[in-house]
Image (cartoon, rainbow, N blue to C red; front, side, top):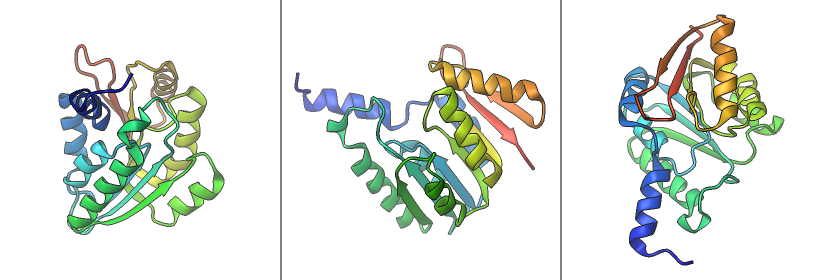
Length: 190
């Protein structure tokens, strides 16, 4: 069934930045003034764009995305991500966009060249193994690491976050708004 333009706009708004506004605001307060940012799993780039507006002038912004999820392809997530990356560059930031599997060693090495990062946001592969791999590969590149969906709806994110938090190796913080069903977890490696 073909979507009307209004249906497409509604779906795009949802996928572009689905985070609960209170959770997002708390994370953006942490991003404020940082000079380097890595997002693993940018999808349309809506959250990336919001974080970039909070960075210090002339910051480094790196995005890694591999569009293989359930995002409707007719909404052109990669095209929209590229537009958002251009907008971020227009803000005066240096932007690097990598399209490919975040778990591939070559991708990890390419991203590492632009680090370390003041803030890393992990929002890519939501399977337990995927979140764990992104933490193992990209977590050490960041001073502060954010995780998406720590309260659901994907069990892999919830399980990995609980293990990481319960290990008490790092200071952690959670932003979970009532009825959000998502949540953001923060790890302070500093």
